[in-house]
Length: 466
Ligand SMILES: *Cc1c(COP(=O)(O)O)cnc(C)c1O
Image 1 (cartoon, protein in one colour):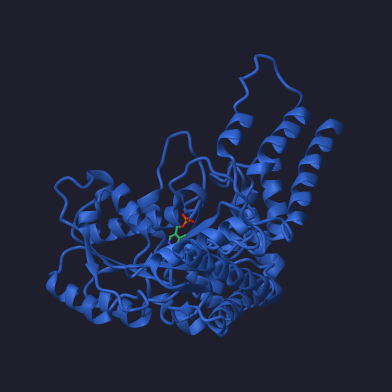
Image 2: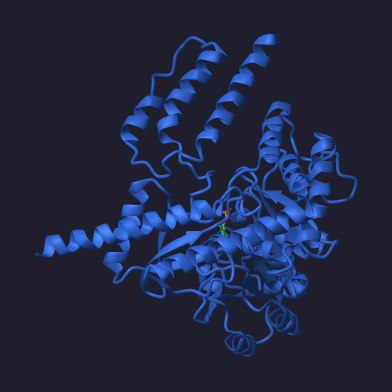
């Protein structure tokens, strides 16, 4: 037993040592992927290996290929870090090896999900009566929400989609903004609705759905089964669809509103950003990530549904050998997984660690840091092209090629990491601030590095031209 304790300690020590390096570690280092593959690709040994040796080998092989996504100057995608208590809780979830299937396989996991779910709904402005499925990511949350949507709009048309499938079903129309997240399309594909079901609705300059265009599309489309996908937090600009009036409009047409709020839904948890999700409670289903802005470890997200019966009708299954949740949908009744990792422990711990005020501070600080980025880069003469309403900043450095050169230079420099994107036909640097440990100094240092590298790449071009 002492050997197991020593092994677990060593794993925890490695994790803590790694976390300590994040503040100074180069964020993006060029990696020799072939060498990394080779380090792992030792022949499968015939004989067992002592666990402590396995751990040492794993650490040695993985270290050169770890990306400091959990660190304070990683601004790529929208990743977020992983808070101390949530990470420790996730280690316990592995140590306890609980199956969050239902209250029989793990009463504790079900209780943690229930408690964390209650807190989440409170913070996100979602009705307390909604159901919450703890899923792997925004992708899975969109799939669960849209499965519930598919169930209900077809049930309203007299069609039982769980029993009969989609062959011969009344066609389902999906209205979604032109700047929706690509995972929405994959969810529609997986649900058999197909991307041809999408009527693309025009988006405004910040990428939000145009309410007039949505009204026209609803009017022109007749009264058949209709699902509308709205967005809280565009993945490029951070902008929000107008939720209150559009939910009302869709409901008057008998449709279902699904809100993809993978990171943007967290605006609800802070006083200064709450207005951005005004009316959010009126939607029918919501997708939100835990592993992005809430700074939970990967992977955790939440699929909320205003109607628990509909959520469970779409996602649950029954089998003779399963006994379980006693009529209240929980655990695997609300997700596409059957046997599941107990994600509720980390969610509960992360929320308990921050508290209501801590979550608000996290959201507001990231937004303030995004504005600091925008101000610093504007002052340096670069072009911030989006309204910085949240934690996202889009920056141009001249033409597409010039911007791509700066992004590439920043990525190899290692001071910070930023992504590139194409927004409205133009290549831009995309900065996302979603880590709880990022400071003013981190932003200032990153702005200085971007200035330096932008100057160097443009000088380099002048040299190569002359
Ligand atoms: C990240 C994101 C998703 C997908 O979430 P995953 O956690 O990567 O599965 C969906 N929608 C939006 C708006 C996102 O930002």
